[in-house]
Length: 104
Image 1 (tube, helix red, strand yellow):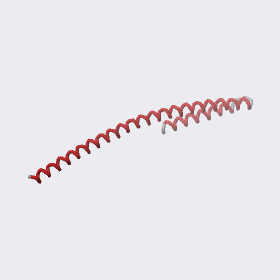
Image 2 (image 1 turned 45 degrees about the vertical axis):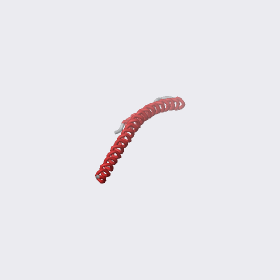
Image 3 (image 1 turned 60 degrees about the vertical axis):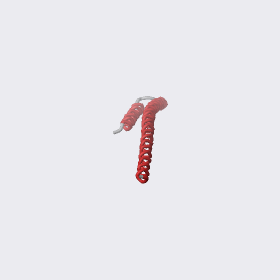
């Protein structure tokens, strides 16, 4: 089970427990509704905080991966240019060798 599912399950269980506790407490209806609203607001703040944490962590990982891929792409281009230069040089050398052998 992923950490997101565990967190969701824990939060859902906490919310259900809080609501059941409030509903079975011997209070007036207005007091019960107020308590439910307060618990709901607290739970919403908690969820927003966790979502923000996960969002920040994902953004950091994205930036790290993006930097690594940019570096790898740059290295790949450099390597391709080196190979192209070596092949061009080798081709010129072979062309000169053929010309020299034909002129001899």
